[in-house]
Image 1: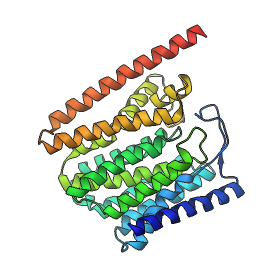
Image 2: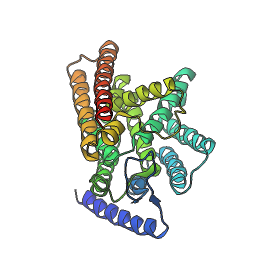
Image 3: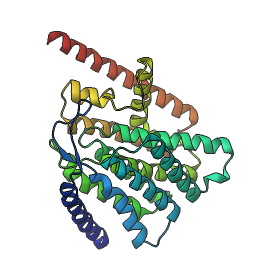
Image 4: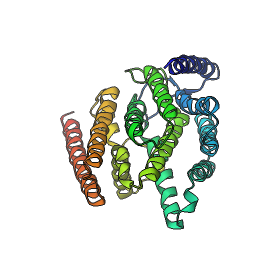
Length: 323
């Protein structure tokens, strides 16, 4: 336990040092018409996530070097993108390279080619979805905590990943939460935080799926997945560029249009995902999980999401008519 306490002190110190550096070099997030915030805030506080993984790698035996190398690529390119926009081609090449390193580490290239293609699409899609969802205070922190604690829970009885890595990532998210999950955030995760956390969660998810040969664990990412897919379909119907920033996710409608507090919206997303994870773990524990149950559960969640979104959009329209 002492080592985790020491790591906590080190991570707090490193994040405070980064704040000084970011303030000196003007690494800030200025609000625009698509933003869900209205004050200038330090960008890139999520750099603590890849730093944590690197410290774990250096301290706990230099394991998983290819995965850490992929994380490093993600961190560098994403941080550069926080400083000055990087072209889409460079970003997608970086994602392909980083994910390829991860797949090499996980020995996924031994699988049939169609599984590999599907894995690329799913992993890169997840990373970009997670990045797009990082739009309000607390959402990345709370959602990551739910995912990481769920992985830690399973890892206690079914080891599939280094326990020390998961615990240290939880600590890093708690440290970040102190500065982000508040009414007026002191820092945002930035692309360097959201992209690398998505990469780390993908790493753990792949490890769990390979250990169990069960794809149903992807329900751990259901809330973000459903919101992202439905929003993409919605934007395609409106013939919008799905790669441009927008304010049409359900969490954005709640926080920007209905004026719900950011942290409250983030908590709703996290709590919803937490209960989905509980049900998923319970179904596995009683031997009831199957592809059919998985599909039915996912369909039910999608219907619930559509119902909630319809009600929210109706409230927004009523509010506009009244005003």
